Structures are given as structure tokens and as C-alpha cells.
Length: 137
Image 1 (cartoon, one colour):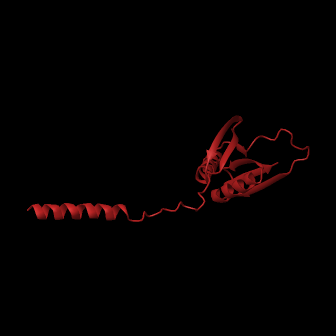
Image 2 (image 1 turned 90 degrees about the vertical axis):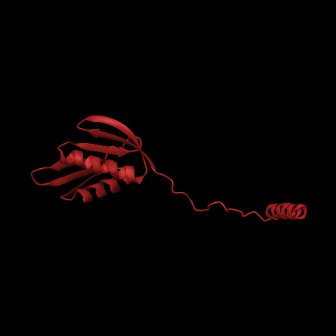
Image 3 (image 1 turned 60 degrees about the vertical axis):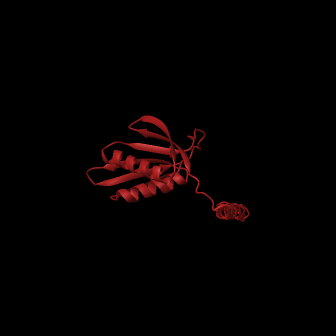
């Protein structure tokens, strides 16, 4: 029995040494770029009451635009601008107007114009069923 015990003990020690000498698997760091969240500081006005919000990510931005469209559909006049307000704006302002019956189209247009630096206003005309979107810089 003493011989069996020594054999088992020797086998255990050799096994531990063999495991200890194995090459460690190196885990390479993930080299893919993590998607950075776009952060927008938005100043918005609903029926003349101005507020400011910080929005992180495209999903939150689209949710904000859907909320603005819903408020416009309820009869509110909504206006918003990303970034700092441009108090030193030139005397000549460019104004672009877009009308549509599609809420999705209105949201897409407002998104595009906002990305271009415009201040965007969205209203809904209940009689015609159209969104009236105006952008000015």
C-alpha cells in the first residue's frame, strides 16, 4: 500500500508540474473600434417654453424626434436646435420649408436639417393632415 501511495503521490506531483508548465493562452485585445455614442445638446421650445437636454446616441435622438412629432400632431409648435444657439447669426437667413402627410418623412427631414446645423420648427395642420417643417440657419 505504501508503494501505491507513493505512486499516486508522484503521479499527482508530476501532473501538477505538467499543468504548471503549459503555455498560457494569450487573449488578444479586441481591436475593433467601439461605436462611440453621439452626444447632442439640444435646445428646444414647445409653445414658447425653452428647455435644454443632452441626448446620447442615435436611438435616443430618434425617440426625441418622435416625441416632437407627437407634440406637433397634438397641436403644439415645437422648435429645436442642436448645439449652441447661434446668437451671432448673419442678417440674411436661409429658410427652407417642407410639408408632408407622413410623420416618418417629417422626422427624417427634420433629422437631416438638424444635422446640417439648422434650427427646425415642426407643426401639424389638422385640416390638411400635413406636417409643416421649417428649417432656418
